[in-house]
Amino acid sequence: MKKYVYTFVCLLFLCCVRSTAAQENAFVLENGLIQVMPEYANHPDDQSDKPSMLVGMHLSFRNVSKQGQKGMIVIPLPTKEKEFRVGYVAQYVNDEPKEIDYTLDQEKGYISFEVDKEIQPNERYDIVIEYYTKNIRLEKKKRTITYTYHHLLPIEHMKIVFYQPLGANDFKIVPSPQYYEENTYGMGMYLYEFTKMKQGDVKTFNITYSREDMRTTYELLNEYHGNEQEKENKTLSPIFVASGVIGGSLLSIATMIITLHKRRGKNGK
Image (tube, rainbow, N blue to C red):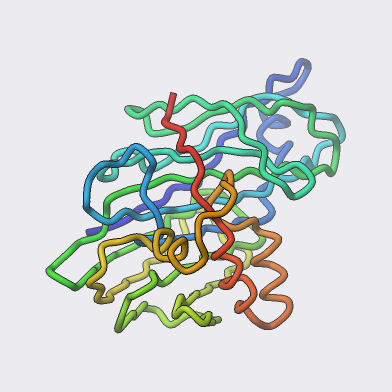
């Protein structure tokens, strides 16, 4: 069963006296982080006993025009995937996520939201979108995932990180990761880095592992550490992953996951 992610981003700028070409080139996508977390958590409204896949998309844009820009961002999402649900949408303010209102078009397959302030020349605009699907194939204890990433917009730097669920055995991912780290709870992180990705680039990852426990990683972490204060988003800010790579180790990032806690889910509007 295949898991598709489409990250072509269409920025519709509500600017007067702008040509179409100028509007299209006002923003560039500089950095991206995709976090793929099988069996980490379920959507708060999910009552089924089937494991979920949590995906966090962290995208960083920059205004490369000479004028301030404000308008609407439209991002296609794989809304036709099995039991697709949006969990969280936010913009980053001083490296902290701030939840924002959005509109989800389930039929056309995109999410849209207004930029709440004018983005000045050379200023960054960072966003995070988290969603859930049920695209994990079960054969008794065995899990199989085929994750295909279709890149539809040029980008300078892209990271894709896969998180091994707690209690998973014989976890294998192809192709081999560029970086790997494991915390004391056996939660592995598999990181891939890409530079200067072009429109049309495709990356496919095949994952297999076995797991008996049907509880989520989040539930198991809460058992280890007790219920703590609720957090807004479940995936990690790009600044943490970047600092881990620069530091030469992902261990601190993997350990930080134990501090991520359940928040209220937000359905598409």
